Image (tube, rainbow, N blue to C red; front, top):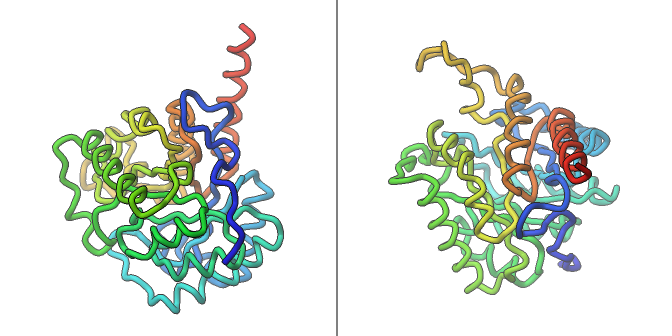
Length: 294
């Protein structure tokens, strides 16, 4: 198993306003059926080259995943997921990249950590695989626990809330309790409110408006709104049945949500297009710096 790294990654201050902008987590989908890029990075060399490009553009870390979590997606076998991601993780980690493994399977996470990954990003928060929490606890790496209710095939059926912000916070608290009981260190936990997972457009907007309350739980927060469906329906003149804009046309909207995440105190934002979010966060930093000298 790889050597444990400090969970206090740069920018991970869990309290008050962050000392710097959120980290930018660049997405590397090693899948043939991603909603956002249609499998453009499915071949290992293409995925590695894409990761290198994201780093050149300003990504602070790379999130490498081999399972599509778009609504209705079928799960690959564990062996197929391993085949897709391990070589990519190793190649990018060997170049000095800080790598996150995006997986719900403990065996995939374990092998990715051995290959050089430094963080585990589990959209199920450890619920999909009972061995995930013990693994993370034993290694001591940062663990992103997302708000999750069901796998992709049925998650849209679970989009029912009395109050989405209150309910998500309550369920994240429950997940934190479970992780702590499993031995995961308090300082290793990062939370993700799970935009688009078992949530409709209205839920996503309400959750974005209440993001500061999620940050108020006292853990670093990862925000993953990039290219999500609700950002493809911004035109107030379009009817409810109108086709959303294509995922690759949603990067400006994603940059806007990255700015809102920064204002709320998020630890990191997970994005497909790094330059647009990099520039939006640079604007935020310049304004903060100017304000501090006023």
